[in-house]
Every structure is written in structure tokens, then in C-alpha cells.
Amino acid sequence: MRRWGIVATFAILLVAAGANAEPQWMTLPPTPSLPKAVQSGYAPVNGIKIWYAAFGRGEPVILLHGGLANADYWGNQVHALQKSYRVIVMDSRGHGRSTRNEQPYGYDLMAADVIGLMDYLEIPKAAIIGWSDGAIIGLDIAMHHPERVSKLFAFAANSDPSGVADIAKSPVFNAFIARAEKEYEKLSPTPYQYKAFLAQITKMWETQPNWTAADLNRITVPTWIADADHDEAIKRTNTEFMAASIPNAGLLLQPQVSHFSFLQDPEQFNTDVLHFLQHVPGK
Image (cartoon, rainbow, N blue to C red; front, side):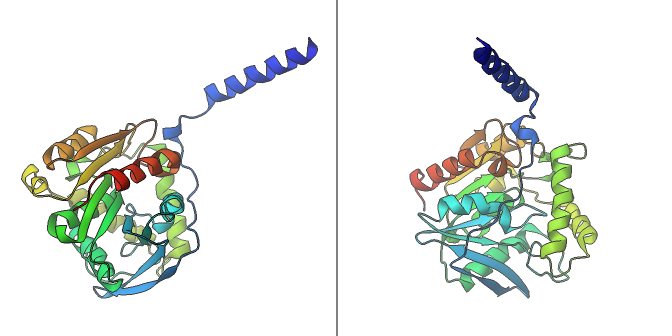
């Protein structure tokens, strides 16, 4: 009886601990690391140097990270995708290990950087998986260079600044911004310029993109508009607007996660991405 009493007490403690645990969408798991690359280096693109890495073999899939982040954030996805695909990650201009010049940040310019890297790697067309700013860049490419995109999985994008929620009081997003500063100092060729970098990216967020329903309606690339049911940065109405405006687009809302779904529940995120890659016909 005494042993069963101990077991019962332990079970009650576990339940209590679970009840007191933070919801998954309120956590910011550690930034993963990338596996060993088949190829990596710096590509001369549009007057700057873009850091990239490639993994695995097969049809090309390009992963585009969010604002302030770097390619390491895709570590969990690369591990899953490299078994079946040639996976390419890159640091956007001024992010991570990539350099920048005096040109102001803009989604058209960063989309041109992706095209430049594809040219450098001799990739005529690829599937694109984008998160946040990376998803916006993917939409920009699909809009202006549809011949280079076979399909697009756009997670946590917005079509204009009004689609962004107020993140000032979000503990998860503030923790991400603080982490991004430490990662910038570690990786960047200009490690002491984070404050200026953050100010310039924030200006871009406040003014871009500016897509109408007519703009989105021009996208012919097979597209899924995806987001999290607890996204602290993107308004649900804007996500639904984009999915409704892009012809034949899919709408996916991942449960129990936030803007950082791919860190909080990588198994769910990877399963959705693999389903998209394997079952949605490309152009």
C-alpha cells in the first residue's frame, strides 16, 4: 500500500507540474544548429556576399528565415528534409553571416538576392518554404518571378503593415529580439551594429509590403498560406485575406503554436511541410 501511495503522489505531482507548465505557444525553444553541409560558402550577389549552405540530394527546396534571425533557425527542418531533398538555406542580406551595402532593406531587393543565389548555384526553379519575412520574400518571388518557383509554403506572412499585430508586450517576441541581438553579435561581420540593423528592419516592417488583393491574385504558383493559431505577430484576418486572394491557395492553421511554430513543435511543422512538398503538385 505504501508503494502505491508513493506512485499516486508522484502522479499527482506530474499532473500539477503539467498544469503549471507554460503553454507551448508561450515558449521560445533554443535555436537549433544546422547539420553538416554538403556545400557552403559566400555567393557574390547584388554587390554583397550571401552566406548559404546546402544539404542532401534531390529536388531543390529553399528555406528563407524571418527578420532578425538567421539560417540556423531552420536546423530542425533541414534534418527532416535533407533525407529526400536538396535543401538550401541562406542568411538574408545583413542577417547572420551575410553582408549588406547602403541600399535600404526591402522585400523586392531581398527577393532579388534569392534569385541571385539561385543563379549562382545554377538552380533554375525551386520550392520555397518561408517563415515571416522569408514568407513575404517567397510571395514576392512568386509574384514577380513565377518561373523560378515550383511551389510556395508561406508561414506567418503579412500582405501589408496593417496585418501585423502589436508585439511590444509579447514576452516570446521580446525574448526572440533579445536572442537575435546575441546571435547577431556572434555571427555578423558587423557585430556592433545591431541597434542600427534593428531600426532599419523595423522601418521596413512599418512600411512594407503593400500588396492589394489584385496583387495577390496574380500569383499562379501553387501556394499554401500557413500560420499558427496563437501567432502573436500576424493578425488572423490578414492570413485569411491572403489565402482568399491567391487563386487556389491552401489555408493552414497549425494548432497550439505561435509565430515560432517550427521551434515549438518541429514535428508538426515538418509533417505539414513534407505533406505540402509531397502531395501538392508543382508548376
